[in-house]
Amino acid sequence: MTELVFYTNPMSRGRIARWMLEEVGAPYTTQIIGYGPDMKTGSYAALNPMRKVPALVHDGQLVTEVAAICAYLADAFPGAGLGPQAGERAAYHRALFFAAGPVEHAVTNRAMGVEPTEQQSRMCGYGTYDRMVAVLETMLDGRDFAAGSRFTAADVYLGSQVGWGLRFGTLPKKPLFEAYYARLADRPAHRRAVEIDDALLATAEASA
Image 1 (tube, helix red, strand yellow):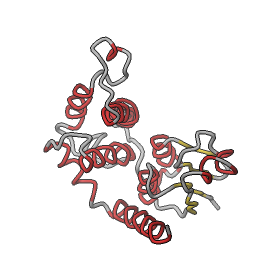
Image 2 (spheres, one colour):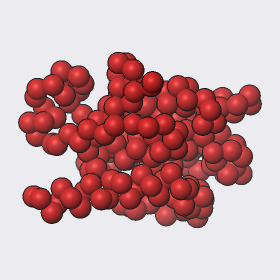
Image 3 (cartoon, helix red, strand yellow):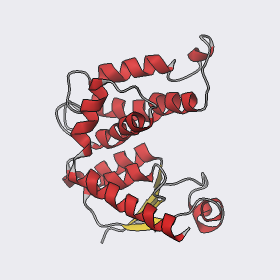
Image 4 (spheres, rainbow, N blue to C red):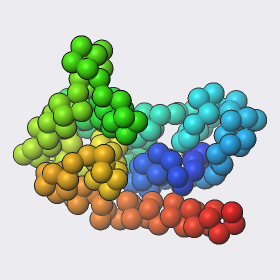
């Protein structure tokens, strides 16, 4: 029987991987890893030397990095229909890697107050924050989902980035972004994932 062990914290990017696991629908075991010693030392640090969550172990194989977890699960459980079909592969992979690269880096740098000069922007994979936002708009314009007309694993990752950006102001509240995320937020798997992690977070806060 397939064994999935999910290492996460409800205050982390593990929430994205949780959504993907709920979309897949395969049973999995959750191990909550606390920030601090639990994450930085001992058995978890040996499992994932990056000392970050989430991590996924599938039948003894380790997968880290949220975009990789999403893509891996889509491949490992093809019956869920979350991988790309013919004609979707280019847009699917572009969306996954654009979100994991330019979007993530541009948003993080801006949140830390890092604004590259014109010359420095040549070194940045995202160029400039404004350029990243403009390209993201063109990628979503005229389509319902990241890969076209059908929901895929790319939407779990890209959609989470967009939803987070809209909620916390790290992306502008453009109608295109809001409409895209609205198509994703009410998915049953997304609602289940949010309920699970919110309950875990409430439990952690109550015991603190």
